[in-house]
Image: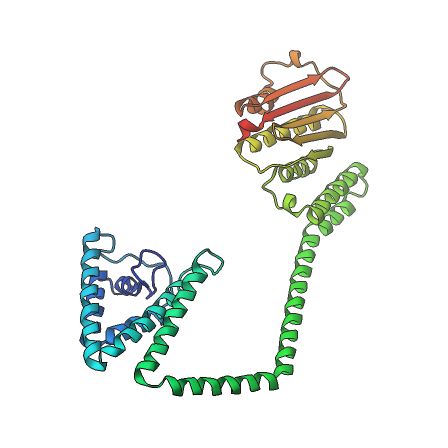
Length: 382
């Protein structure tokens, strides 16, 4: 069986996920890897170096759980105890190797670097609350450790002089090459602007090809059918206006976007021109989706049975309700005389709206057209 890749988990890790990722790669218990690292750290200090190198070079990813990784916290407690004991032994070794004066500076430096790496190693961004302050605290710890280490070893004065000389040299290089840096920054800004314009031009060209050019081809194909040409032109005009001036509506997800899409589909499938008016807007939920389906069925009924070439659609979204009016000036009918087996209007329109807590009213008479009023209270939609 192939071993999983050596990656560090993004969650469920004690510090950096080195032990968990290595254990998953080797298919062993994470506790074994932690014990080995602690033993190497207490024996010669090499475990700290190995852990730091793995932390730096091993990328993050999805880790396949190793055996024992999901066991109760008793094993994790044992691992933490062993890690603490190893840290105590390591501190004793540091005091023996380099003198007790080096322990505090090295702890400050290591702790500061660990804090910085820990913050930058996760998916957190600097915009999240608290992250910049933690990074600043880690930087202060690391800087304090460096200064204390230099002071302990008697190299603080030499380091200060070298640092000042380095700053003078860097300032001279920056001032001498300032025109070059400015030209590079200007060229970078110009390149970025050109790339953005190129991407926008490509997006506009793709949209025009998929919508306007295709519609023009259809208009040319149906040049002899004046009604079809007018319907195609109106549909394309409405779609293009929405894309140019109401991008949120064109992207969908709102009642206005749902109405626009529904009108375009009905006009494309039936010989009916619809004049929609939308006042207000709201995010689409299940209730509004059902109201849209009932509205679409009312428009389809007008296209099939009214005997007219156009219909009106008015919808208004208020704080109390969402109202829809579908009106045609066609042949009309007597609602009470509709046969019982003709259940399209009662099931797909009035019944559907009633099931989501709304009301549907159908007003029609022979020769006077038909008006369908749908009202959905916002409390029912919520």
